[in-house]
Each structure stands twice: as C-alpha cells, then as structure tokens.
Image (cartoon, rainbow, N blue to C red; front, side):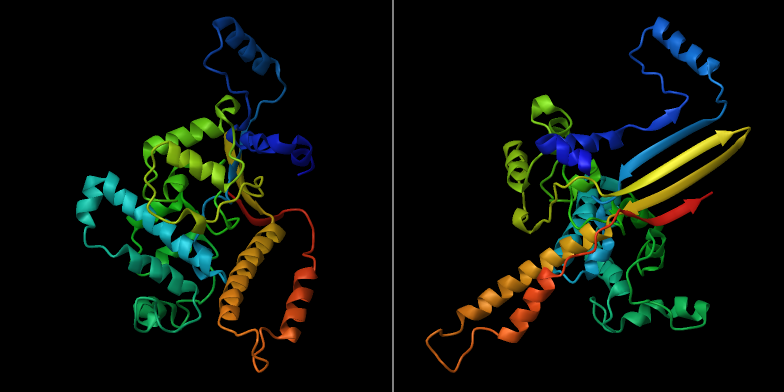
Length: 343
C-alpha cells in the first residue's frame, strides 16, 4: 500500500503484477530467439535447485459476492441480484443449446433461493415456507439444519441450494466469491464479471475495455465511474440498467487468492490461501448503509413543515449517537488470511 501511495495516479498499474505468475524453472518467452532460449536452458541446468514451483496471485475481490444478497445495504442486495441475473441472461443469448434447454427456467427464483440460504426470515423470497425445499436434506442430516440462515462459508455450499444444478454451479463458479470487496473494479475484473455489469456489455465492448486498461498508451486504467461508463458508451454499448446503481471501486487490490504448487522427487503439494482486508470491506458496507440512511432521512424531512413547532425534523439523541458512531475509527491492521488449504 505504501508503494501504491508513492506511485500516485499510476498506482493502478501496480495491479498488473497479478497477471504474471512466479515460477521456477523460469518460463521461456516464445518471442526469444534460439540463442537466448539455449541460455535460459543452460541457466536452469546449472542451478542447484532441482524442484519446480509456480505461484499465482489472482484478484478475488472483484468477483460478485453472493453473500451480498443478504447485505445490510439495499443497493448491494439489488445490484448483486441483477448481476447474477445478467450472467444467466447473457448465457441464454450466447448459447443456443442452453437457451433452448432452459427457456422456461426461472433464474430469478434460483437467485432468491440463494438469498433464502442466508435470510433469517422463515418465508422464502419465492413464497411459502423456505424450509419445505430442504425437507429431504434435513431428513438425511437428521435435524433441522437447513437452510442455516447465515452467509455462505464456501462456494461448495451452493450445491445445497434448491434448484442449483452442476451446470448452473459451473456457470457461476468462476464469476462469484464469498470474499468480495463490495464493488467491481473494472481495471482488474475478469471478462465474465465485466459482462455481468449490464446486458448491454458485448464481447466487443469488453475487448475494448481490456485493451484500454492494460495499455498506458491507450489510456491505461480507469480513474473513476464517470470515465469508465463514458468509455463504455463511446464504444457502442447500449446499456439497459442504471449505471449509478452499480457499485464500482477503483482501489488497489486488497482481496486476492494466492495459489502455490511445488513439485520435488515426484511429489506435488499445493497451497491455496485467500487474503482479505476486512477493515476496508467493513468500511465500504458502512459507507453504503450510511448513504442510504441519509437519502431516506432526506425524503422524510421533505414531508415535515419546518414552520410547524409541533413537528421535529430529527431526534437529537439519535443524531448524536450516529455522529459518535461515525467518529469511531475502524481498527487498522494488515490483510488477514481468511482461507487456507493444503493438498
């Protein structure tokens, strides 16, 4: 983070380090001539290290966080549902076979069922008692454990959601996470995630976005929402949704996945870790909720006659409490390892 601050406006370029793996033996670039390739091979041969490894760092935060379907922020809940719907809508358009097979599938009900897993309400968003859809699973578990009414602890739990087939899971798996940073970063998000922003995001537009953000000569990374959406519109996207409602972020990566694979003497080990800055994540949710609260209070105040002494425009005690909460600093610290797996 200190290096990013020193880079100033060029700090988004630091994110491009995630695009390149760290490996031994060193990968030989295809564009090298035969002489240079021989030099690479000689270097590897002379090395005393006879093991191999590869380490990749991937952005995790700019995927769609399915837990945001139960966020305290109404905006995050609604935009997450819209993005998930966009994934299936675009799949229906681009894959004729899939479109024919699932012409009558209610993907909105599937997404509601995902939200039901987390909701503390007994009634399903699709109507009726949500526990009814889990009767078989609860019988097998010999208890009333499902749905657990909590956030997802792994993507694999999506398999327990009523209506979630392996096919649907595979479509979602590379696009969603449970470790999101409460906003999509267009400068590092995958092509699939970018397409989920709006049904009008075509392959051609996505190609132009990637070309621009990866090349400083083309303009480099986007600096803010306006610059991004202006560029998208300029490239011919016919946007169908409200861009102001889509939470975008242009911060440096702070939620990411590290995968390291090593091989020695015929044995292979792999470690996967996910690192997350919980403080920034909490802060972003707090900002969304705070903004929504201000908007709600503003609408309420409009209905109050300021000249009517019998009416009050607000509760002084609650405002003092709110002010105190806003001034309470969020504890600082390094990003935490929230997931670790070895195999």
